[in-house]
Image 1 (tube, rainbow, N blue to C red):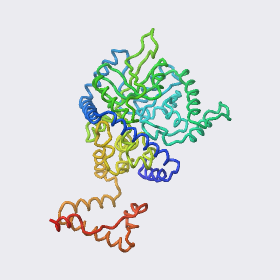
Image 2: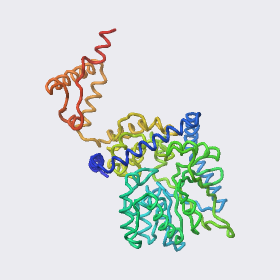
Image 3: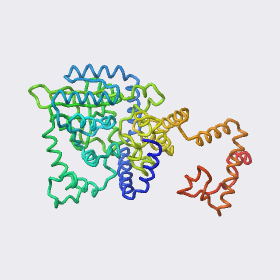
Image 4: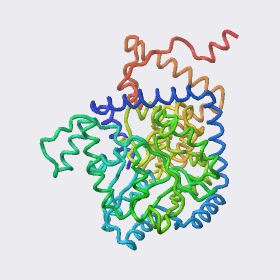
Length: 469
């Protein structure tokens, strides 16, 4: 994904009349839901403090906790695999499928598998994966990526889904009524039941890895995870190493902020805890494989962006971000979108290809204000901007402009002179353009292409302060 792609996609999204209503629904539903959930829990801010401390303690002790998790998971009958990057994780999953003769696999919603493009790899290896989360199933049929981390198909209307189902479910009666949401859900349930019954393996992600017992914890609102993880004879979980927590007590605290921040629920409808494989005389998978995915996370832990590892993937930063609300998720081009995606995508897909993402922010701070584990997302975005500037990635004109601003800001007299000249220039433009600044010169033209400016009313703040003092 190049910077030009991002700008073009963002421009197209902002002019998409069908996308705007969907994003408006997200704002009213998720933002209001979180606010009400926080009001119902009087100690919510204290709970956020505890969750933030738990996640940072886990990041600090990550190597030891992961070794403890491996020992306990192995003792419970699971096989633990370590994957340094996406290619290795995909190869491990494909090998497990090949060794067990897996031809059909069902999957629950997993951003880690989206991150490594596991579905495409499995198809090349002769395994047909079927997404069982309703939103993921819809976008899989459409050949799209998730638009939102917790609502993958939020960009679609029910008419879009009906059109998709008619094209994909050609074996069903062409004159069937699927005009309503309940009819669409019923049809998806029929098709997915076939996939559940025919699957040779189930593939999930993991919301948390509990070192204390070697347990994988997953949350969902549809219950498909339970069938995905327990109905087939082989279960494969692909989980980022950053999902580690020390104990069940820690997991309980994180759970209490997760759903409230994501969907406004007091608790997710389903919380699934998986420890090891089923005994021979019990129901459940006879093989449990856990792929611990690094894919740059260890490098992030050693960088100035380590705080991002505390992320619990709730999506609150997307729900409150004015940039995401204007463009939607696909404009970002990567697996993750919104403020969290602007931090993670340069790590996973390269900064040079995604240097514009850290700049896709107003720095209003809403993302940090609502983050359940208090990740300083604006600061992390600034770090990426610093890295891009140091690598010479931004256009020459932008670098020169920032360099000139830095030069002016290093001496008070230069700064005062620059601000006086800017104020005079803006007032002059306002006079020439009859009281409103409708066009700025050079790069400022992009800013005034969609808005007017009011000219400065008088002198600079510093000059007024000196005069009134």
